[in-house]
Amino acid sequence: MQTPFPKHAGAFRTEPVIWVGYSQITNISIPPYKTHSGWRTPNDAAWTPALLACEYYEATYTAELRYLDGVQLHRVINRQFLRPVVNTSLLQGVNANDGTMDNVTATPEENYILPKDVARYRQLAAYHSMGLYFRSMLNGTIVGLGTDANTRALQTSIIDPEDYLARPKLSEEIQNYFDTLVLSLFANPRLVPVVWAASPDTMTGTSDGTNYTYPCTRSRPGLKYYYRARVLVLVYAVAVLLAMLGVAAGAVALHKNGGISRNIKFSSILAASRSTALNKVDWEGPEKDRGHVSSGVMQRKLGYGQVRVHQGSGEQDSTGEVYDEDVKYGFGFEGEVEQSRETRK
Image 1: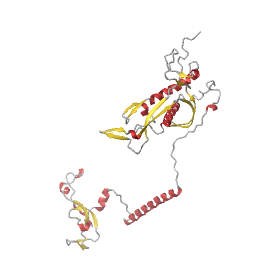
Image 2: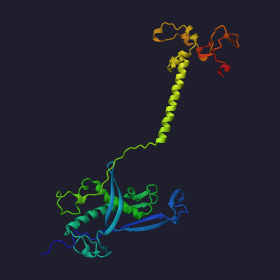
Image 3: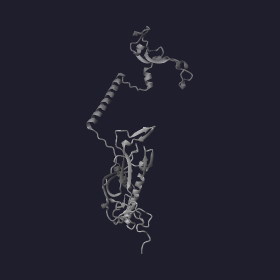
Image 4: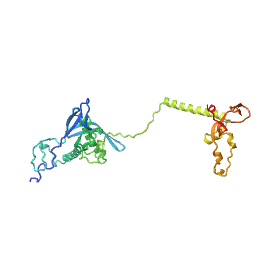
């Protein structure tokens, strides 16, 4: 009894060949673009059109997969092409007339992949789906300077985002991009454990699984410091020497001050350098307890300079007054400190 379905119903007859046309700069002695009426257009003399064809092949990969912070990275170590996914050649302009809606004709017909060959058909269906997605990413056009782009290829690594031109060695870039698509399947955790898919007749759980293991190297980032003994000793020696010099300078200063240490707060500096004339100021007032100073005191001018100390002995200044030979500097009111240019020098 004959089946009610055509002989080639649902068959994979051929896989499309991808044709990629692009332009590349070959004459760098002239500008690649020329400007006319404010518009930039390509200079045809600097460009050369190119065309390449991509066929779909089965291949075996040897790749190194790395997982860094949850992101899969890969490096293809070896790639060996085996056979075309569908080993047929398309016949242009030949109608199939085999009772199906698919009018594609290829030769030889015995290489068609039919649904009866379940294992091979499933495998080819996966290949075909991957190829369909790959073609959808490359399909389209880029016109001019990239302003008129109708393609998803801009999202891939084969197009330079700076000038929207195809990258050098485009055939290798296309191959590497397809490798990325294939190996990205292993980024899905549900697909990683199925390492026995090449031998589905083997029952799981009956062996230790050593036949399905792969070399694995686990690592984690860390900080490691390497100290050079000579540099380390020199640095610490200089630091210790500076610290000892600071302690010695402080000890000398403390000895000169009679063993009394002082802090470096502004209030302490002001108290140590203030003029004794400030003690004669009437700080009293109705709001003394609140920290208010009388308006009379606020109107007096305060300055810093050589404090006049009347000791009754010593040298005379330009005014004829006698001052102590021990010159002191501090804060004082107008008339109590000397701020002449000679004093400043």
